[in-house]
Length: 124
Image (cartoon, rainbow, N blue to C red; front, side, top):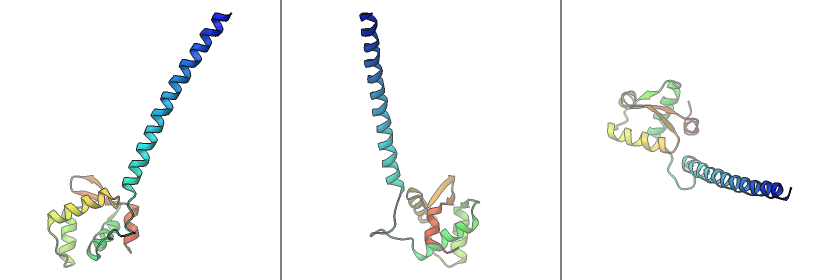
């Protein structure tokens, strides 16, 4: 009976060890998720720049078009029609910048959708 109790105790100690390892892994995943959330939760307040008047108009245009994605060609056409002078490369860079900050989402090659975060800067 003593051997049986010792074996159960050894099994329990091993189980506690595996649960502690699992808990450590879960905490690491939680820390990584919190870090990722901090990277995407971008606040334009407190010293950061807000979208320019031109880019606010472009974001507004994209919101009006959603849930359909907006192509870079369509943004270029909108900019030209509204006397907004932009180079295609600048549009790509700015959309990449906004995607990193969560204002738009890249859904395909040259296709973007505005997120709910973009609504703050628009009056559509």
